[in-house]
Image (tube, rainbow, N blue to C red; front, side, top):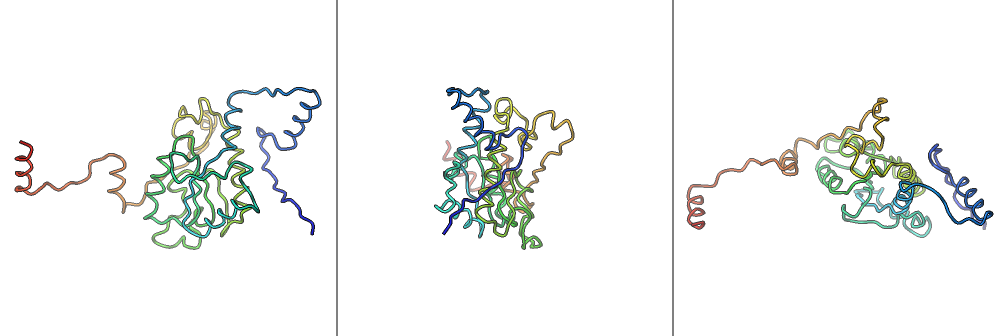
Length: 249
């Protein structure tokens, strides 16, 4: 039985050096006896960040099972630096959202995204996370998580195959590699630029920002609590208020 390696083609980026280009550079260095590669600090930091993407898995249905399959020995996405998953948003680089998101679940997803440190990314896995899927017409289903948080990579499918999930992670790697870290994604961009991953020049030339809508009105009280606004508090009964004042004295 002949075993063949899966061939995954990359999306051509002018700024991204493909595998053949990297191999050519390495061969030239070995032939010349030189072990030094020149570059700037941005490239070095982004190289490290792109090869150590820690994900926060937010799985609500069958697409989450496919993500588990990617971590098994057959696909072995540990070789790309994706194997570390964190259930804490403070230790994660990206949210891997897989499955249907209901209006009741939307505030939890938004809160987790807000608690993540910059730079942060979002991957939408499967038709339900991208557009609501077969439940799009339901009264309680969010029609795509892009209504709640800005999405960097969409992985279509119902559910997508493990190869597709791996390919989507590789595309996020390429996005990280061409970003500008200093003066860019390290808090020095404004909110619109961070959501787009673009520079000031790109915004000037008419790029539309990603609109992050509010969560449904049913959760108005929770939003007010998150935003730090005082909620409506009923005054205590007179006898309770009098007892509290006496205890304070």
